[in-house]
Image 1 (spheres, rainbow, N blue to C red):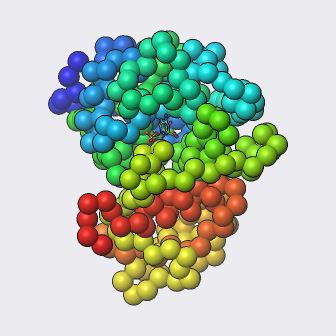
Image 2: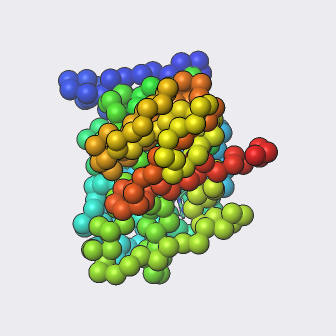
Length: 329
Ligand code: TXA
Ligand code: MG
């Protein structure tokens, strides 16, 4: 199947869901690239067992091929076919799947997942998404679907179909449009290889995970040159504008990304006027894109508290503010 020239955009809401799912499952089976909604962000899916499709996926994203992909499956039984679960992994899957949690687990030798998708690792990242369209697609396809966030490498993750098209129109075969993603930040990634370890804060708060485990999560020391989760490279989540964090107000040449009650600024978007972290997470990436689109070169970002989803929001803001890889500050 060839990606060029067009990307088919199919509505996947209400009565349009069933035919869209059928077309998307057929496209995946033919080696195509299908962007689809999850509760966190839109993913760019390919058949996890088709190395050629995965090579095209890396090319479409412009992603360094050392970056391993998450295998998405319909339920925990399918996940057990790909990876070995220890007691902690079983407890987390029972508590939080389907939902915004990815588990990094020892891979099974004959899982069928392409080595290219795993970037040569002995572990595999698996996730059972909660979004009805994602679930229907995985059920119809009857196999694992690898899906990174559906953005060009280095851009912020897409939380709407328009974001996907802005980055990938003409580079992918199909897009299922089901409106905005309810969570708005990527899944929380926990490795259960020995000690349960937080690799990426995300849409499931750390506190909820620690309550189920009955103990604190270890946190991976992410080295710049040899990251455990390579997507954690410090400038990964990058808008074009420069960000100034923990601002009280915007300077004369700055747009303002506010949280809670905000001082006046010429260009202001508010993550959550009422100071709600769930609402702020859902708005984070679309507001960063909108401020970029406004032509702002500098964005002052107000302080966001660190508890609950604030951990993931602050993590993404810190990455967005980091100097971009390969550019001079
Ligand atoms: O919410 C999400 O997780 C979205 C939706 C589409 O599911 N997906 C997503 O995928 O954010 P991606 O590829 O943008 O980020 C996945 C992260 C990357 O940082 C990757 O390096 C890491 O997971 N990862 C994947 N497999 C890994 C493994 N075996 N060990 C450590 N990190 C891994
Ligand atoms: Mg990503």
